[in-house]
Length: 427
Image 1 (cartoon, helix red, strand yellow):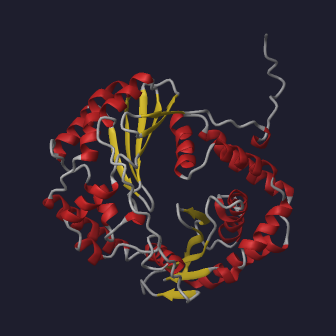
Image 2 (tube, one colour):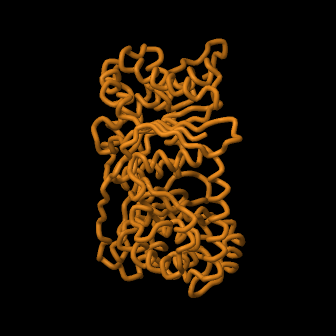
Image 3 (cartoon, one colour):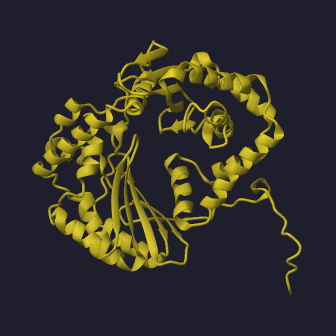
């Protein structure tokens, strides 16, 4: 059947599409460890993630989670750092270790056919690191140098200070590395943190790409043979000690030409029923390039190159923060305009055209995420790590499609009271 190219194809908005998150398979290794996997894609590639509850939240000593992650590949009982790196390079693989607020994730990207050679290396790195003293000293020197350079930047200091103001400087989500905390780290600290928190009894493994039962059996043969210590880490709870000072001005660079603005508040977690609707409202406010904040403060006023609001959703708490850098002479005006945009969302309903644009933006991003095995698994990983099922994904789709201007105005009146926000300006 020939196509009549004189007739333009029908263009549909993403809000009109149906969305289905492809299913994954859950397997249990011989020692009880869970493996979540997805066979998808046409290329002979695979990505594996091992996610441990080994982030800042679990630290017994400040700065140790980042240091442990940074030193994990620097030698094991069986291999030197050079041998590890040469093997990864030989097979064209990438092995990264990233420590965050709640988890540390070890990520392997490789060709599927090389997994038999690579997985024993990863297992050795994960389970048998030795944390050489000389490597730790070099790490500390470099980390301190990076910190001292970053502390000259107003935006870096502002990020530190807003988190400390919201949660307290002793809280895992509010504390930040200092030179003395890095200097105090020892190899014994890293070994203890690794022993306590890099446990196969608590890891979750995610595998996506061109994989099959053969790769599942391979993972089981290597990671399922280790004794799975069933003793879970002690659940820690921390008291939030927010600053009583709502507004702070910090002088950091007397010769600087701009200042960093951070306006934030503690927020609801992903488990709250308002969270998904607030994703929509935050997108309108400052969550993408066409947002209210960007249109006003960047496009109309010309005060900044970029301004955004973001929801920092952690396992045990959350924050909503507006962040931008502007010229020193327009700081007060920019702050006033931020609050003005909050007030407008509280007092005036969003028009249908703008709301449809935001819905299409959010749903379009999800549509893109459903196109490849790695991004599909990333969606699943977020659900699983936060204790959700596929129902949460489906519920969010319906919220993004059907939320109304009336509902968003009610949310703005609930969460955009400027008296609930803290304000940090670093110049």
